[in-house]
Each structure stands twice: as structure tokens, then as C-alpha cells.
Image (cartoon, rainbow, N blue to C red; front, side, top):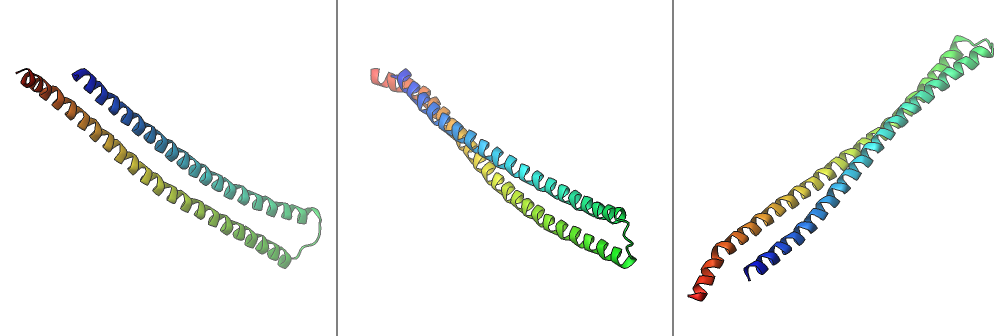
Length: 156
């Protein structure tokens, strides 16, 4: 009787432990995948900003070389207008890309908050599992301590 009941209690504990462990693994996997996706998104946004700034810089250089290669006499006023226009275009592109980066960082902040919430859930689940294990061990200890007294009282 003692062996059968204790083995059934242990089997029940193993089933509960397995379900909790699967939940923990699922939560951890989801957390890691969300964090990696947010990190990759921010890296791609930063690379997009860098490449866009390089593209604008190269287009300004190409415009200057075209102006030099055409051997057109360019007055100082026209050159200043072209440079001002190029600077305005560069600033517009930088502002748009800065907005993209800010949005990506806001998404990253939201993801960090979500990861914190998921981590808190994992901590609660782990604490619940430890409490469950302690309850099981207490129940098993009580059973081991009380069962001989019950058997001797029944034989009595």
C-alpha cells in the first residue's frame, strides 16, 4: 500500500513537473525569438539609415562630377543653389530615416517590456514549481512518518 501510494504521488508530481517544464520552455523560446526579431529589426533599420546616407552622399558627389565633367561654366549662385538643394535633400532623408530609427527603437522598447513581463511569468512559474516540489516532499515526509503509526495502530 505504501509503495503503491507513494509511487502514484511521485508519478503525479512527474506529470505536473513535465507540463510546467514544457510551459517554461515555450515561454523562454517565445521570449528569445521576440527579442532576436526586435534586435534584427533595429539592426536592419540602422543599416538602412547608413546606406541611405551613403547613397545621398554619393549622389551629391556624382552631381558635382557631372557638373565638372560637362565643363559648363557654373556661376557661384547656381553652385550654391545646387549645394543648398543637395543639403536639403540630405537633411530630408536623414530626418525620415531618423523617424524610422525612432520607431524601431520604440518597438524595441515595447519588446523589452514584453520580455520583462514574460520573464516575470517564468519566475512565477518557477516559484510555483518549487512550492509544488516542497509540498510534495512535505507530503511524502508526512506519509513516511505517519504511515508506520497507522499500520501499528491497525495491527494493535
